[in-house]
Structure formats: C-alpha cells, structure tokens
Amino acid sequence: MLTRTASFPSHYLTNFHSKRNGAACGALFGARVGYSNLPQDWLAALPNKKWLDKKVVAFLRMVGLLPQPSPTTTTTTEEPVVGNKES
Image (tube, rainbow, N blue to C red; front, side, top):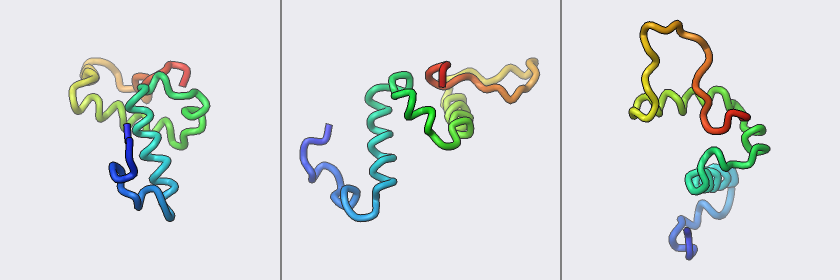
C-alpha cells in the first residue's frame, strides 16, 4: 500500500494522466483482490473484453499457467473463460 506521496511519482497524480491513473489503480486493485472478485459492473463495462480475454489466455498459455490446446482437437473460437464464468 502506498503510504506517502513520494512512493508514487507525483506526475501520475496530476495534470492530464486521468486514463493512466485509472489504469494503474485498476491494475493494482485487480492484483490485490483477484479477477473473480472484481465488481461485475466493471467487467461488463470493459471495452474490448473478448479481445482482452484472448490476450490473457494466450499469455497464460505462453507462461505455462494454462495448458496448450491439444493438436488432435478441432479449433474453435471459444477460449477458456478468464475469471468469473458470468463475465
């Protein structure tokens, strides 16, 4: 947890960095509570969620946290669900 202003670059807290502030805060909050505990209305409003889910699944496969698809199975557009199945 940030306990003093000096622990976070002050230029992120001022001027025209509102999108970066939101992205940084959302990333820190998500890392702290986990994807499945994020508010559902946040996930519903996430632009390009399907694209982002595909990128996350590809990354998880690349680092070995999800198995690679079997070469004997047919390829579909369906990807494993990231986080809540309700998302």
